[in-house]
Image (cartoon, rainbow, N blue to C red):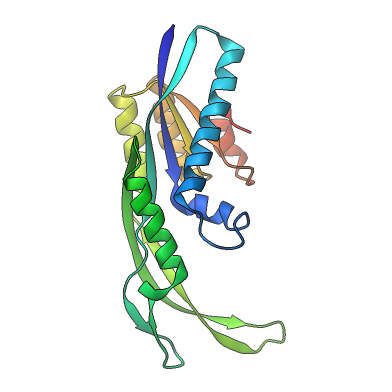
Length: 205
């Protein structure tokens, strides 16, 4: 029996966006992430069985890419001070990251989240109803690309599975393939660019 090691790379921002509709608009929990990792492994093993019954796919490690929630205080244009640590989204994301950090075979790869200002909220009648905060994530996508290159160069695993949908991953995907790594894409049913799907060896669905 030939053992094939698999690294799963999860784009946390992508995962949040896909799952908000599944969990009534709230951020997903660590259990949602773990369930999708298990689903990804199941889909990979199903693909493998079509090629060979003498290969066993095993999970090497899950890399989870995200940023810790913004924890400062800001005053909106209406003069209202907002403490972001008191928000439900802050608590949910903090709980998710802390739980994943304690989970076997999970590795957190965190970038930075910076405050980018306030966006006006306009209702259907064109009336200003308030403001929502805007944030900018930094250093996350580049960590995904760097890790793919490092994993492929050092032959850490035989297969890489990406849970995400960013076309910026195409170049590191192509590099990993040239290094002999098979690449799988799980875009969780969200529409992504054909170029991203075509760059991978397998689309999981």
